[in-house]
Length: 236
Image (tube, rainbow, N blue to C red; front, side, top):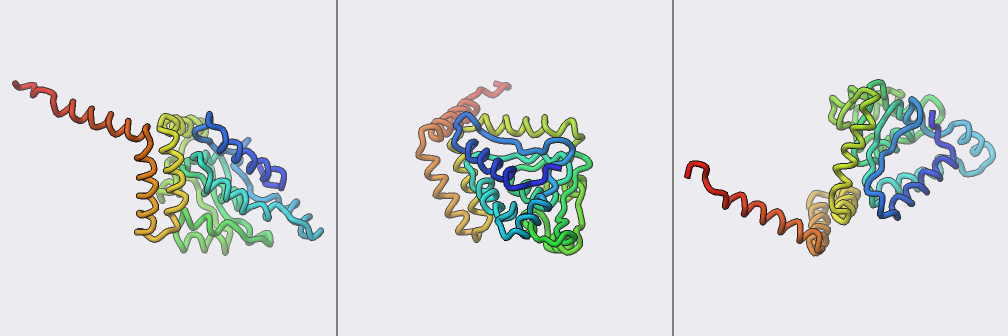
């Protein structure tokens, strides 16, 4: 069920850091092996740590989400099955989300003596729904997520990865510096007031505009528009 023990979470963090430092990687797809995206924190490992007074998987959560939310490379979640608890947190920390028919998201912690995931769910869902999820363990299907506009699409399982890969290829075709700055912008403006967010985005836009690649893109666009306007009227 892709439960998250400490070695698994640390491996995810290390992988995210490697992705960030590897210029050959433009975008990454996050999905689960088998039929489950992730059932969340490994409860047995967490209980063992609590009983021993030692750090457990939950203590690595902030480092994991920091690596996901503030990384340089876009992340696409291909939710192939249940994404529960920390699994929902991982999916919500990706930039673009798709899910397969049969996938569900939920916060089952209330039934197992734990808490977590509500703040991540609030980035995707409304007040009442998140409260119901955290207080009762209520789950939402991929179909419901699509109806609410939370995910890009709800797809047959065999179409999920191809759809994610198509979006990844589209992102990978863009200017890497523009993508990195857009990623930085997206990570910051979500929590800022409107004008502060716009000011931050404007500063990054100016930084991007000063690069040679961005200026070349502007010139190319302007030349194509000028050429289009200069085309003779077919009726002449």
